[in-house]
Length: 222
Image 1: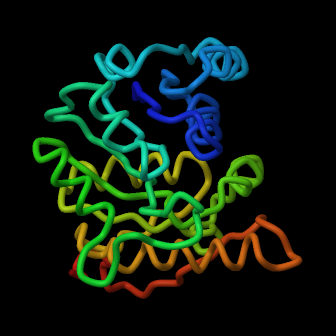
Image 2: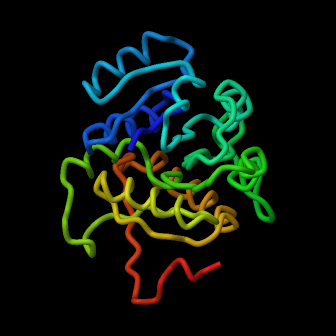
């Protein structure tokens, strides 16, 4: 797949690098400093490049939205039309101090983004996994699905769900379909729980979680 990364922070950078290692073509974009994008592209090798947001998404099959909540409107305005694209959002609606959710209970940041991108196939994924653990899981990829750490995702679109599940699996995790975008009302607070466990305990951010499911398909949950 050809993947445009909108955001060069920890999550966007690390996922972009791993996607190239998994064989995908990646274009890094959206940073205060062009040098950072150039460095990421060089680290990622021949399967990577960098560009301004509109150019990055022009030929992309998938767009990874990996910015702070406060930057969503800005990056989407720079990217331009995304109609028909699969957009994977790992955005959590945090305040400027990254300490509190600014949306919750009867709505979610993901559902707000869906309103901004009505013609896209939106899926929320990677919100609940610390970026620090991604490389370690990728290096130690396990074939046995029952032993893999999980990554939750949710979407209203079957094709977007399929794409997200493939990318999650490609970097060594077991994709767990949590249902429709409405489920983001619960996965986003769960992301805050993983933050508490990863960053406010002595164990550090090398945190994974695992859901063991029976034969009941998770996509049936709404």
